[in-house]
Length: 496
Ligand SMILES: Cc1ncc(COP(=O)(O)O)c(C=O)c1O
Image 1 (tube, rainbow, N blue to C red):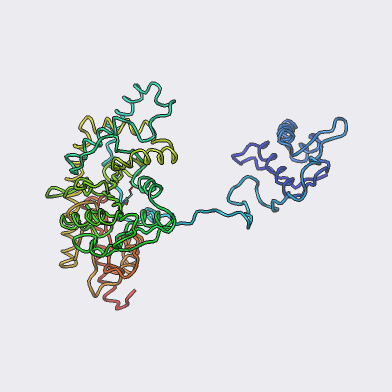
Image 2 (image 1 turned 30 degrees about the vertical axis):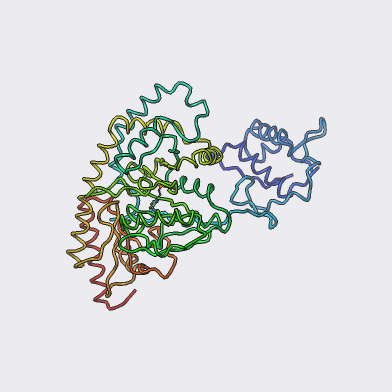
């Protein structure tokens, strides 16, 4: 009896593993029917040109897992008990590969949603990508030293469950940092350590959103928050933004679970919420019984002037939930951030965090706590501000040199600027494609990743340029290429 089995000696899988997989496939696809005899080990080893031991080991495993049965002195058979109707693996499919599994039409998942765009997929010569600190800025030497130090003192910390809200020392140093840096005076117990803003926003959504709840959101907004709240079936009330941040007068008068805002550096336009609007926003929250989610993503990197106090620092009514991150100051790969909640939300926030993942990994928290405590974080921020400040100046100067008085916003802080393209330029997506053909990455709002709810003053004519991962030479060369591309486009007279 010849079986359709072929082994590949060059494969990474062992011969016995390949034999096991292929036999299992033949059984599950019904090509070897329950009860049918299979070749003796000697016969099959000769057919395949492998040792008998290889076949024996594969058969032993098939028997142990219930695919085959041996009848002493008779032979080996496909298990007769296997239910024929369930043997549905299609010919050619390899068992065990999740991507090949056919989904039953009756099996439903409750989740509906879309992930935010990740701006790293294409390789450019000069990439004005967003949200990524310069890889060379990562404090690798200090980190290595601190990892070693905390490992030596780890004792039982790797084997125990710890407080799901986070490590007390890290919560304390974050609370201490937020006082002078953001004007927020909180008890360390109000701080919850999370895997970046994204987890903080998830936690907030679980705390506050019921299906169909109304959420006021900036238009345009950061995709990570908009798509997240939509996945919780929230109903959006998009609120316009202008040079002073979110237009508070356009917020709904009643019935909003919360307003999600980016006051330090509106994402993606880069505007700063004025003090007057901050106070009116707090008043709105108090009057309507809504919360404010303050996503303070870009707060640590400000180039001149002292930052405006955070909304949470101005709040006296327990309306503000503050979200901070180390993604832009240290690195997005760290996945470390924090949530600060008003006192009455401490217990429920801790419970949600326990249900989500029972706390952030201890090692990362311990290293971060040491990094802040020893003063290295402050020093690191000063270095970043100097470095990114010089890059921002270089970008602004080059844009103006090549394109005249470019309408830029967001230059006071953060790591990107928004540029409203003037008439006589292609629209944002055409401009992005034109630059991409010259090896330069610049980003329209949707690829930003920003969410445009329509009817927004910046739709279609805004591009965003991050300057944190290019040095001055790269910025100069990248913008020069964009200028050449624009010249060529104008000469060709062919709008894209
Ligand atoms: C406004 C805003 N909030 C949050 C995030 C994500 O932060 P994290 O990496 O901490 O999840 C980003 C990232 O670009 C952002 O722009």
